[in-house]
Length: 129
Length: 129
DNA sequence: CGGATACCTGCACAGCTGTGCAGCTATGCA
DNA sequence: TGCATAGCTGCACAGCTGTGCAGGTATCCG
Image (cartoon, rainbow over all chains, first blue to last red; front, side, top):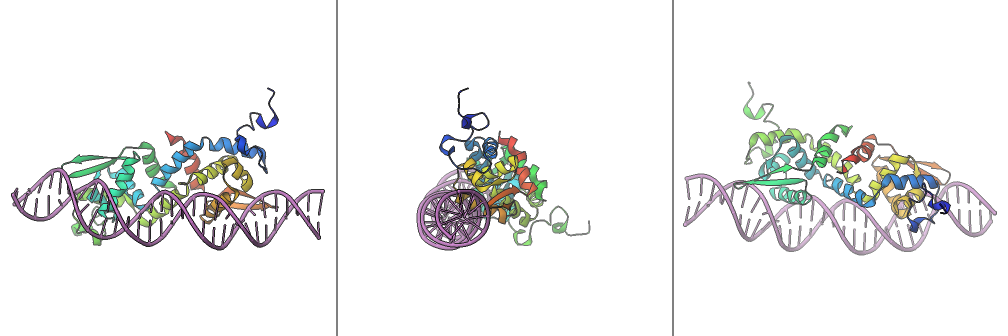
């Protein structure tokens, strides 16, 4: 391989447009780039976390995770939120593919459909420390 | 059961100011209240998730989690962020008690100090689905 | 000593986000 | 048929948040 040193397998991970930046520990920079992985995937993960970053939504998801499908009105009473606020949150979560609503008469019951978010909500709960 | 119905272990959980609201499935409301638990703790958890909700911060934490302490400049090169942006993110994370900075000469190396966030960043990474 | 480097801070600005209010549709019940 | 309930939506507003720029301090090297 006739490539220059900054292109060896351990170094080529840092994008070309940043290859000339000064670094303190060059190898750590490469390790970090490898650790971060695809930036698009990081953005997806960050967006998923942002769904849980609101107290209202987190409370709603906690409820859905533990007691199963629930109607909007019940969720509003349980969380102390406004009915419209619950609808708004559900619209957002449904758009993100986290919950799904099933209409029974004039009542709509929402349930968790995203396993990953479910794990996050329920599984990592013990890490509250 | 000598206690009135609204005080039995399964029902008294819904706050008095919402006790007169109409509900679809009353018992589910109570289960939900129990599932949500202390609202203050929910807020704390939501705030913790909000720290990971930014792609920049998440990338920084991924790097710190995997390669250990790193300098601001190296983090900037690895993530493609501005140096000032990294400083800003670190200020926020340090204020939240997630990272700590150790000064070595004119270089400041940050490291992860919050185990819970570390688990979140690293452990739940496989759930990317 | 003087310049360059590493980092921090303050400020102003744009963008997103949560919230409340009002109005609307649809369903169930008398 | 008429009314109350369950839920959705649009809009306007305040608040938070990320970002860039400019300037400041501390450290190292020649």
